[in-house]
Image (cartoon, rainbow, N blue to C red; front, side, top):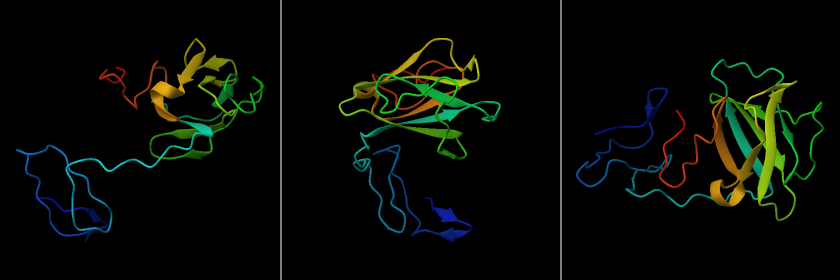
Length: 152
């Protein structure tokens, strides 16, 4: 049995998970039921790429994203695109895309310090339009595609 609470107030009744049937359940805020299959995700906004970036040191001052192929307005190295928000994960960059873009070329950097040494390219057909990155690690934490493991 479990309950979902915020500040000590239950959001719905106590529920039970039958682990013989499923190891996970999906619940919706303010609703009493639960489902054993994930709800259909809302469609992604294909006019932009969203990159969620986490640094182990938590220091995001001066970090920006340099963009070119696929970006609606490619950036100048000296004027990278800055994050649109910061949250518990890290910072979020939103990059408007050209019509029909299939990839986004980018480098996360602070001045001449690059997060990764080589140019990066987000394949939109493979990974979609939103990804989660871990500073200094190639690839994406999420989404995971092809059954591969998350980066070490």
